[in-house]
Structure formats: structure tokens, C-alpha cells
Image 1: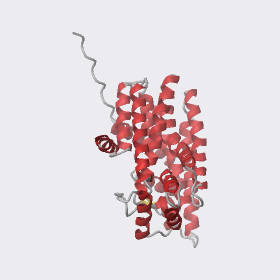
Image 2 (image 1 turned 90 degrees about the vertical axis):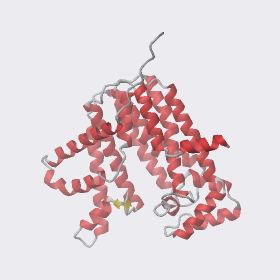
Image 3 (image 1 turned 135 degrees about the vertical axis):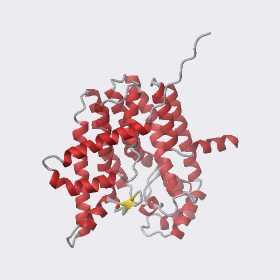
Image 4 (image 1 turned 180 degrees about the horizontal axis):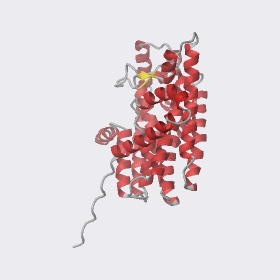
Length: 359
């Protein structure tokens, strides 16, 4: 009787995250003690506070899992530096995004531009705060380029370069879609493609895989998993903002106040009656939308059937991502970890699936 093949030892995702954070903080310590250290002190104080604000290090994790699609060896120093560079690149994007959106908080903590504003001794504190946060974002992007630019494997350069352009395109498309007439479903999905799918999942996975000398088949399998998952992740996040029963009802609703052209909103307008569309026009994009009017907007969107359609879209894309992992030429431990991350990114969706199959 042949012996059964032993199951792959699960990857320690917490340990990987800690290794990336240690690499990142060593890099920042090196900058703090370098020749520009005294001038960097106030910037580094705000940056460290921002980095400690509850980020999940999703992009660094996907980078390291990209490495593990090819090998069971622990991530090399080069991979950890690339992962740290991705976190700084993400930080650069968030710092600028918070200024663009005039967000007062992130994860319940003051945003960087608000922190800088409170530290200002000038009469133009808000201007100083915005300007300093933009410069800190620029510094993070420069340091990200320093870490990612030192990658020794030429194949890793392509996804890095693509990611930089794609993220900016996604931010610009998102900015263009804020306010005004609600665009089409395809327009909203295009924003997700650039702003979330590419830069959050696909490119980080491919960077890590390329550093492990991945084959073209592995690189394509990374894309096959990342594309539906990235869409599902953003659709799920957009849905959370508008659900009448949202667990974050007191603090969400920002997409509706900004008039952000999400998929769920595009679908709501597509399926709304003329009367419902007129009511949505009155509510969506109102920066001062109070709790009562926010509840009305959410109820209207739900009544159009848009929330149920997006639920089905999330479930379908989750199934596509899991199927892509199952047939991918990845190492078994990486497959297990990617399945685990899929469930963490879409909490509760497996229960939706069970409910839907029981009907």
C-alpha cells in the first residue's frame, strides 16, 4: 500500500508579517541615524505613528506568498526588502489619498495631515498639514523606489514599474469619477481593476514570484487568482459602505457622501425607477449627509436590488479565485495560505454561499 503524501506545513503568516515589519523598521532606523536624521525626525515621528495604525500589511504578505508559490524556503532578505518597499509605496498612496479626500481619521486615528496641522505654529496650520503630508508621501515613494530599485532579479522590475503607473491611473480615474453623473458599470469596474486588483494583489504576488525565478505559468496563475479576488475585495468593501445593516453604520457612508462611483451605486441607478433615481440624486454626493438621510440612501439602494446583485458578484469572484488557486502550479503551502487570505479578505462570504446554496 503506497504511503500517503504528507500535508504541507502551513506558512506562518504572522511570522512573515513580523519579519517584514522588522525589515521596514530597520530601514527607517537607518534613515533616522543617517546624515539627514535631524531633519527627518518630525517626519519619521508621524510616519511611524501612521504605520502603527492597524494596517494589515496585505501587499507585503502577497509579495512573500508570491515567493512561496515557487519555493518552501523562508523569504530572502531581498524579498523582505521588496515587501517593505511595497508597504512604503502603499503608505505613500494613502497619505496622498487622505489629503485628496480631506479625511480626518484613518482606522480611528488622526490622519497625517491632521497631525502635522496640530503641530504647526503658523496661522496657516491646515495648509501646512496638507503640504507636509504630501511631502511625507513623496518621501515614502522615494524610499519605496530605493528598496524596490535594489532588486537583483530583472524579471521583478516589470511588475514594479507596471504597478507604479497602474496605481496612479486608478487614483486619477477614481478622482474623475467623484461627484457628477454616475458612470456605467464598466467604468466602475475599470477603477477597481487599476486601483485595487493590480496594485493590491496581482503585482505584489508577481514581484515575489519573480524574485523566486517563477515560470511564465506561475506568473499567469498569480494573475488568474488576483484578478477576481481584487474585484471581490473592492466590491465587498463598497457593499459594506451602503448596506442598511452595516456593522460600521456610524462611521461609514463616506462613499455616498463623496458621491463615489462604485459598482453598487452604478447598479442602483441602472435598476432604479425614475422616482428612486431622483431621490438618490438628492442624497448621493451630499457631504453633510446625516444619519437619517444616510439610512434613506442605503434603503433606496437596497430596494433597487443592487446590494443583492453585488453580493452575487462577490461570491462568483470568490469562487473564481479559489478555483484559480486549486489549479495553479503553486507549492502546496502557498495554496493553503492564499485560500486563508481569501477568506480573511472576504469575511462572512462563505456563509453567504452556504445560505445561497440552501435556498
